[in-house]
Length: 150
Length: 130
Image 1 (tube, rainbow over the protein chains, first blue to last red):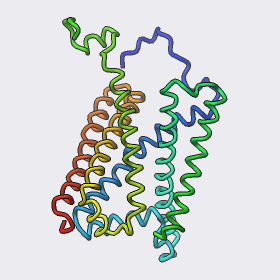
Image 2: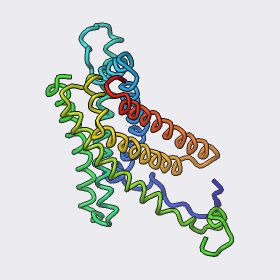
Image 3: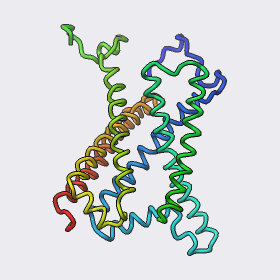
Image 4: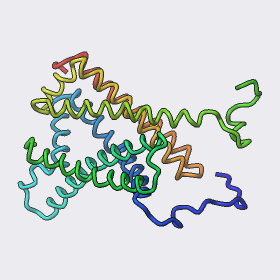
């Protein structure tokens, strides 16, 4: 806003050696923002479609089908496959964002309590949230594709 | 005001605290806990439903045991995302556009929560006939 140029700035992101804690921090913001915009829109759409009627609900389930790759085998054109791949990428991305934000949020509770700042502990749990989110995303998608048969 | 004849804005411009800094931080944590609990309930409920077609979903949501937690989930989630997006804007947008984005976040989060709550109410009142 009205920054006094003669006052010193803290050396910002560029000067520090990158570590997993920095990656988790920025991922928490990116996934949080993504969920806030797209995740909440899908939630509202689902509720509004359920309240509106069969036609609106069918449009919504069609969209979810796009995100889960349902019906991808029906069409053969390259452009179609690109569209299906995009849908699945968004679907996988949203589920991953959910788990990443969930786990890094849980990590924040511990940090807020003043614990977990020991360098090795901090590094371990930062990596754990990334690995954990990937594993949970894979498990959730395995269940969606093979378990439920959706 | 602790007896001082100045507004919080005046104090902030004098580089003092507006005395509300921790409140935003605390609400963000509080709503994260409630959102976490409610999403746990939500996901378990969806998995336990026999199907996710409209009839099943509407019948489930029409019950107060589902409608009330779902309304709380909407309030908790939208409150949490409004606070979170505001922090992101406050950290990265520094010029006049900041006011625009913060206002937009306020309006759109209220709009989204309003639509969702209306939908839940409509299902609760009209039931399966909705």
